[in-house]
Image (tube, rainbow, N blue to C red; front, side, top):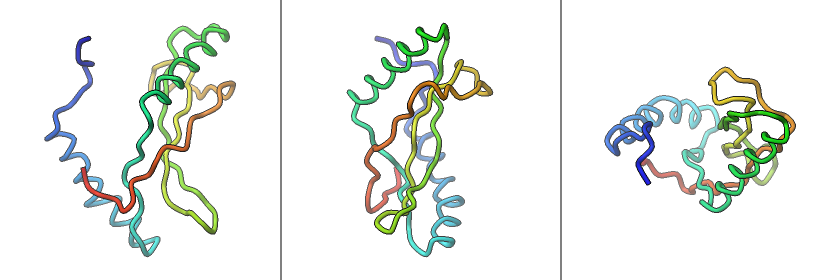
Amino acid sequence: MTKPRNCITVLEAKALQKNWNDNQAKDIEKAMGSKDVCAVTFNIDQLQQFIDYVKSESTKQSIDNPGIRIYFAAYNSEKDNKATVFLNATESDDGNSANNYGIDPLNFGNGEWPPHAY
Protein backbone atom coordinates (compact mmCIF):
# COMPACT_ATOMS: atom_id res chain seq x y z
CA MET A 1 0.00 0.00 0.00
CA THR A 2 1.25 3.49 -0.79
CA LYS A 3 1.34 6.37 1.64
CA PRO A 4 -1.66 8.73 1.26
CA ARG A 5 -0.82 11.94 -0.59
CA ASN A 6 -1.92 14.23 2.24
CA CYS A 7 0.48 12.85 4.84
CA ILE A 8 2.74 15.41 6.50
CA THR A 9 6.09 14.95 8.17
CA VAL A 10 6.43 14.46 11.91
CA LEU A 11 8.16 17.86 12.07
CA GLU A 12 5.19 19.52 10.32
CA ALA A 13 2.79 17.78 12.72
CA LYS A 14 4.82 18.92 15.72
CA ALA A 15 4.77 22.51 14.45
CA LEU A 16 1.00 22.43 13.90
CA GLN A 17 0.37 21.01 17.37
CA LYS A 18 2.75 23.54 18.94
CA ASN A 19 0.78 26.34 17.28
CA TRP A 20 -2.41 24.95 18.81
CA ASN A 21 -0.82 24.57 22.25
CA ASP A 22 0.61 28.10 22.12
CA ASN A 23 -2.72 29.64 21.14
CA GLN A 24 -6.01 27.76 21.46
CA ALA A 25 -4.92 25.53 24.36
CA LYS A 26 -3.85 28.52 26.43
CA ASP A 27 -7.18 30.27 25.84
CA ILE A 28 -9.10 27.11 26.76
CA GLU A 29 -7.05 26.62 29.93
CA LYS A 30 -7.59 30.25 30.92
CA ALA A 31 -11.35 30.05 30.32
CA MET A 32 -11.82 26.69 32.05
CA GLY A 33 -9.29 27.15 34.83
CA SER A 34 -7.69 23.80 33.97
CA LYS A 35 -6.04 21.96 31.09
CA ASP A 36 -8.18 20.12 28.58
CA VAL A 37 -7.50 17.12 26.38
CA CYS A 38 -5.60 17.93 23.19
CA ALA A 39 -5.91 14.56 21.47
CA VAL A 40 -8.48 11.78 21.13
CA THR A 41 -7.53 8.21 20.23
CA PHE A 42 -9.81 5.82 18.35
CA ASN A 43 -9.24 2.10 17.92
CA ILE A 44 -8.23 1.38 14.30
CA ASP A 45 -10.85 -1.38 13.95
CA GLN A 46 -13.54 0.99 15.24
CA LEU A 47 -12.46 3.61 12.68
CA GLN A 48 -12.49 1.05 9.86
CA GLN A 49 -15.95 -0.13 10.95
CA PHE A 50 -17.18 3.48 10.88
CA ILE A 51 -15.66 4.07 7.43
CA ASP A 52 -17.32 0.88 6.14
CA TYR A 53 -20.64 1.96 7.74
CA VAL A 54 -20.45 5.40 6.10
CA LYS A 55 -19.64 3.87 2.70
CA SER A 56 -22.46 1.32 2.96
CA GLU A 57 -25.14 3.75 4.15
CA SER A 58 -24.02 6.39 1.63
CA THR A 59 -24.32 3.87 -1.20
CA LYS A 60 -27.88 3.11 -0.08
CA GLN A 61 -28.55 6.88 -0.31
CA SER A 62 -26.94 7.09 -3.81
CA ILE A 63 -24.04 9.17 -2.46
CA ASP A 64 -20.94 8.31 -4.48
CA ASN A 65 -18.17 10.27 -2.72
CA PRO A 66 -19.02 10.59 0.96
CA GLY A 67 -16.68 12.35 3.31
CA ILE A 68 -16.09 12.31 7.04
CA ARG A 69 -15.92 15.58 8.96
CA ILE A 70 -14.31 15.79 12.41
CA TYR A 71 -16.03 18.12 14.85
CA PHE A 72 -14.51 19.49 18.04
CA ALA A 73 -16.96 19.04 20.90
CA ALA A 74 -17.16 18.95 24.70
CA TYR A 75 -19.02 16.95 27.28
CA ASN A 76 -21.32 18.81 29.62
CA SER A 77 -21.83 16.86 32.81
CA GLU A 78 -20.81 17.05 36.44
CA LYS A 79 -18.34 14.22 35.83
CA ASP A 80 -16.78 15.43 32.60
CA ASN A 81 -16.57 18.78 30.83
CA LYS A 82 -13.50 17.92 28.76
CA ALA A 83 -13.11 18.19 25.02
CA THR A 84 -13.81 15.39 22.61
CA VAL A 85 -14.33 14.97 18.89
CA PHE A 86 -16.94 13.18 16.87
CA LEU A 87 -16.80 12.00 13.28
CA ASN A 88 -19.73 12.83 11.04
CA ALA A 89 -20.55 11.59 7.54
CA THR A 90 -20.95 14.21 4.81
CA GLU A 91 -22.72 14.09 1.47
CA SER A 92 -19.45 14.47 -0.45
CA ASP A 93 -15.73 14.76 0.15
CA ASP A 94 -15.84 18.51 -0.62
CA GLY A 95 -15.00 20.62 2.45
CA ASN A 96 -18.22 22.60 1.96
CA SER A 97 -20.51 19.59 1.63
CA ALA A 98 -23.61 19.15 3.75
CA ASN A 99 -23.65 16.90 6.79
CA ASN A 100 -25.38 13.59 6.21
CA TYR A 101 -27.80 13.44 9.14
CA GLY A 102 -29.04 10.05 7.94
CA ILE A 103 -25.88 8.40 9.32
CA ASP A 104 -25.11 8.40 13.05
CA PRO A 105 -21.81 10.05 14.06
CA LEU A 106 -18.96 8.25 15.84
CA ASN A 107 -17.81 9.34 19.32
CA PHE A 108 -16.26 7.81 22.42
CA GLY A 109 -12.61 7.75 21.54
CA ASN A 110 -10.19 8.05 24.44
CA GLY A 111 -8.95 11.47 25.48
CA GLU A 112 -5.35 11.45 26.68
CA TRP A 113 -5.16 12.48 30.31
CA PRO A 114 -3.22 14.32 31.40
CA PRO A 115 -2.74 15.95 28.01
CA HIS A 116 0.69 15.74 26.42
CA ALA A 117 2.04 17.60 23.41
CA TYR A 118 2.68 15.62 20.22
